[in-house]
Image (cartoon, rainbow, N blue to C red; front, top):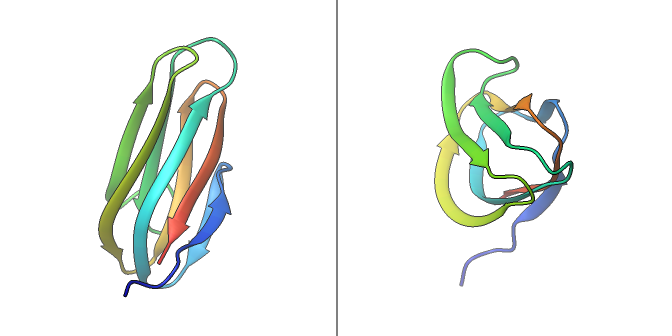
Length: 89
């Protein structure tokens, strides 16, 4: 049986440090304009991209995934306003 994933609220910057497993994410655009988020396997907005998420105005996404990372999860909110969480397994 899989273990429960821990939610971490999305914000620009370092969300998790060290190796781990990105089990999923859910994001919602909150300002009525397009938004873009990048999740990096790093301690900054550089290196390996784990995910790039583009959201339409008032759009949302809820995704279960299975991505390993080595250095951590860094969130870059490229444009727009976004709320939600990533889930670390």
